[in-house]
Image (cartoon, rainbow, N blue to C red; front, side, top):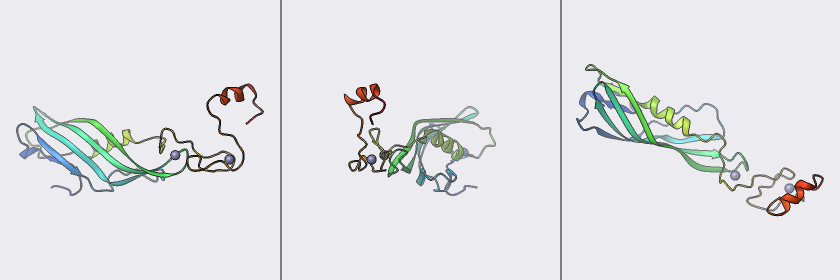
Length: 162
Ligand SMILES: [Zn+2]
Ligand SMILES: [Zn+2]
């Protein structure tokens, strides 16, 4: 039986040259647990070609997951995605195989693509350690100078100066 919301290849009826599977799984199948920093938005999205070759079902394509993340530097919430554009999996099949459920394979690829330390931008300046101001949005209020450019070399020579 087909289970709604999962990526299931109908091996018994698969076309000879392979068949494209394009869609989105049910939203609760990624099962990230209690992470507050990486929150999936919607289901896992897949666009793959599935083909039976000998005693294997080969699937390759692109899988992705839209995410809402909390920046690990500035704590801002931002949208991003985890993507594996080189998804590939091979599953053993035989003459009796009717369906192959690839949901777990897609999930594994997306889990590997998740950001470990999400940042809203590579250039994100984070929060001031002194006053907590988001340095992307405003100036520091506690007087801690933002170290940049030529002055950081001088700071390194004089550790008492912030
Ligand atoms: Zn940030
Ligand atoms: Zn400050």
